[in-house]
Image 1 (cartoon, helix red, strand yellow):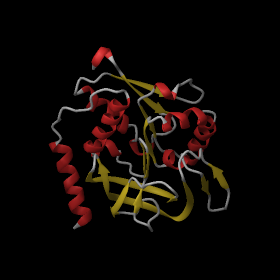
Image 2 (cartoon, rainbow, N blue to C red):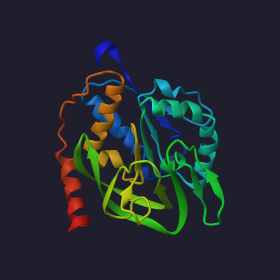
Image 3 (spheres, helix red, strand yellow):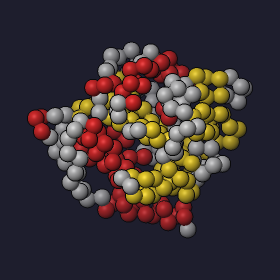
Length: 245
């Protein structure tokens, strides 16, 4: 990269939020950069650690249990203003499941208790009595092209979008709430999803799109050299045939 530039990755709360192996998303982002000679630094930020989101290029926020999310939410609330400014400035963010829910307005439990979210994005989540679980196929717009991505969902929360675009359209599975055919949310360079698996290793096109966005934000060329993705592509096609037959 020009001038020894390094892409800085912020992995928020890796010790608390790693449900279903979600740290694999960071591993995939890093490795696909390294295979192309793009230098990266991973900053693992735990409770109370100092971080300047404005200096980061890619931020990952995973999912966890209710207890873990409660600990994380209290800490992240202190960082809300700075994170919101970085988001509006184009910080590339991937938020999965519980991390996704936290970025919205609130989460309402089955008992009716309202847990405030950060309110950075216009959606809310209501607890449902049925867990939405299984493999998922979603049609997502990536670089002006419709791409089918796959993953695995396991969530009781049902998310409803306000004035915000979904990440994609559900082809198979439940998605945000099992009712309106939407999955995830998208705002500027923020990508939210319920898809575990983890998501990025299964979907290299999406991973490369996030890398390109991070490079663009730095003002760097984002013409990524192609990689041999035959294995990932074949695995994705098998799952798509199984889900869409």
